[in-house]
Every structure is written in C-alpha cells, then in structure tokens.
Amino acid sequence: MSEQEAQQNAQTFRGKIENVHSKNTRSGLAMVVFTVNGYAFKAFGVQAEAVRQLEGQNAEIMAKHNTFQGKDEYAVVTIAGEVGGQRVSASNTCGLAPTSPDKPLSLKHPGRHPGNPKYITQRWIMRFIDELTPEEWRVWSTDARFKRDRIWPGYPDETPASRSASGSMVPSEEKARLPEIKLRFESRLNEVRTAMRGEKSPCRMNPSPTVNSDTPIPAVEKPSVTVC
Image (cartoon, rainbow, N blue to C red; front, top):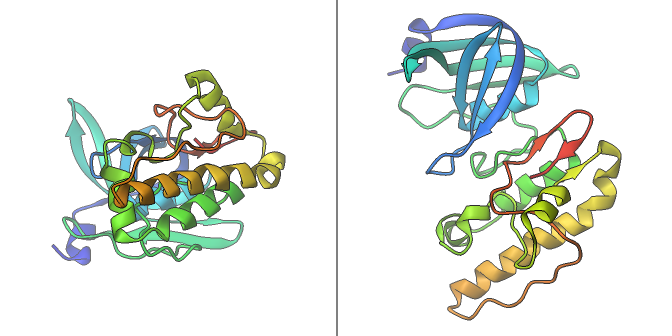
C-alpha cells in the first residue's frame, strides 16, 4: 500500500501529545503509546521518536483505527508538529519500513535506541548505539548476556535500587553526569567485543552504583531527566 493510500484510510487528529510511555518490542524497534484529546495511540520506529520529541506539544496526526484487547486505539501513519520553532515530522507506509523523518541527529539506524534527542545524555547514547557495527549491534541486542539490559547497560554488583537511582537526574546535572554514562556504555561495548572474540568477559569498572536490567527505557521526567 502506498503512503497516499494509507493516508486515505486514516483519520486526522489535532491536539496536545500527552501520557507518552515507551514499550518493549521483541524486535527492539522503538514503540510508544500516548494520548491526544483522550484518544489512545501507538507509534513505532521513527514515528515513536517524533512522538517523544513532540511530547507536551500540539501536533497533527493521521492514524488508522483498530482495536486491542477490545479497546479502541489508533496506529500513527504520519505525525507533524513543532518544537522550539523547528518542525518535527515522520511518516510511514503500511507494512513497509518507516520513511526518514526530520531527525536532528541524522541517525543511520533510528530504531536502535528509544532515546529522546531533546536531552544531552540521550543524544550521546543514541549516537553511540547508532555507530555500532552490524555485528556489534547483533551481539549487543540479541546475545543472552547483554540483551536484557541493552537500553541501559548494568554493572555486575549493582542492586536494583542503585541502578534505578543512577538513571535519574535533574537537567542541570546532565553535562556533569555524561562522563560516567559514557563509561557505562563503553564498558559494555568492550564486553561485547570480548564476547565476539570468544574470550571471557572482563570485570567492568564500577565508578558508582547504577541500573537494573529491568530499568525502564530512557525517558525524561519533568522536572528531572531520566536516562534509564
């Protein structure tokens, strides 16, 4: 089905994007659910990224109606809005790979990490994950040793509480916290590369307590920034 045909079968909604929540998918593709004027929506891939950028902003959405567990919901076909005077948009043709949105990071693999590019730490994480080679990404995201906490890599000696605490910060802390976040992801990449060579994984440095494998997908809370 072409994008034009998909849009002809969709309804148009306008309003503020609210209640954005990330969901895990088996494929690792980014997914969010959210509401506009009380209607329930879901979006995947580049559309999901656009929703995160537009959270709290007014947007125009074209979406197809369906039901899930007996409840009405709408699957996003196109979405467009503005953040700080910059246009954000994404579109998709049904059953095909997402088309390229206006994405400020120009990621080669925009579905790998469901971060929010409005924030310094998450921009770095998204770029870091995007630069992994296909083989590094395969091991990072599917190997049983790493896939469960692929969004926010954990350290071996962390408790669930300390891991959760490590992922929360107020916006003013972002720049100061970035070095420890870089160390966390670079340590995991070293583990992945070691695993690819068939060697025993080295012990990771643990500069400070950090996150549980069950920690939610990185998101930004207001007034605090959550990176896990």
